[in-house]
Image (cartoon, rainbow, N blue to C red):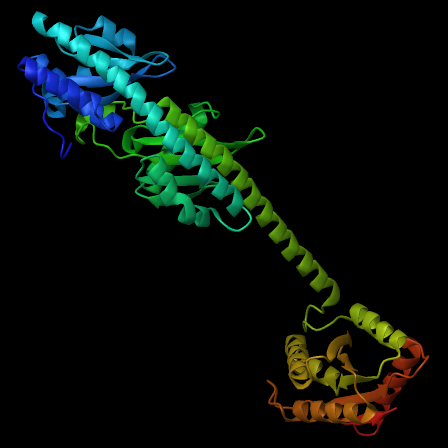
Length: 462
């Protein structure tokens, strides 16, 4: 480790210095490095391996010094998976005590010189005490940090709208708490990543294996190309939602062919427990986002259904049903309002000559021109076939006449897709106090008929 004094162990003074360095280590990684270097000297320069004992009884490599020597001459030292394998081998090992039994083991190829054995025991005891203290200090600080971050996460559930947003806002803080290089969330086949993470294909390959074999209520240390990663399930009410993955990239063993068969341990049990707590909170956030997404989709669907109920599919203006409802409301309100009904002149001839698809194009274009010509508070509806109705809101008869004539002129002058001119004939009236919608519609229909019989392409007031 850069900046760390060496820990030679050739003399009593050297051993005292080594003990001082070990007992003043600031992090578990620094402690492991200083302890391994000192034991390396005491054991006649043999490679030293530190293993953590899992709750399952398996062991995982946590630190090795010097790694190159172990790879070259003592590969088995790197590949032990259980205490039984270590015990039945020819290798020498010691227990590293923890606050609740054995934390792990320290191993090297052969027994150290007899005069060094006592010092080895003292060093390991001091290291165990320091490790216990470091874990307590660091975990207290990090647990407080995680608690604060969890509060922020809870606050942001309503504010942030995607998992990418959550990682963007909280990823750096989570990486700091867990001393990690990267963090990722896997949900519904998508991967959201922050910082340094393995590529998507490698992560999903690991997750496929986990989902087939792992207990989805606990954390799992990843292997192979994803070593250094810890996966925690996102679960809520017995539903598996995805995975939280946090990555540490520490080169215990250089990336050689032996690294593929070595199983490392980068995470302390209490760290794994903290990651699981964060995963529980994220499961709530994921569920909340899913609910928001579903509600958003429901709103869009309802809006579309409402639009379909009110809208003519061909022209995208109001359909007859909704137009009738609006006219009923205007008649009941006794408000000032003009109503225009118009029909496309000789539309049957257009259909017969150019075909119904062309006729549909003409209908759509007429609706578009009418919408552009009318005011923003006027309303256009398709009454049926080639007939349309316009509700000219808050308009006197004279104002209605101006708008109706302008519409006739715009349609007559518009270059349609056929060589023939396209015109409309219209009837115009105003709503009279106390009359029914039926009376109003009969009168305006009569006006349109009069416009047709009078020569077409005009407006008749009725």
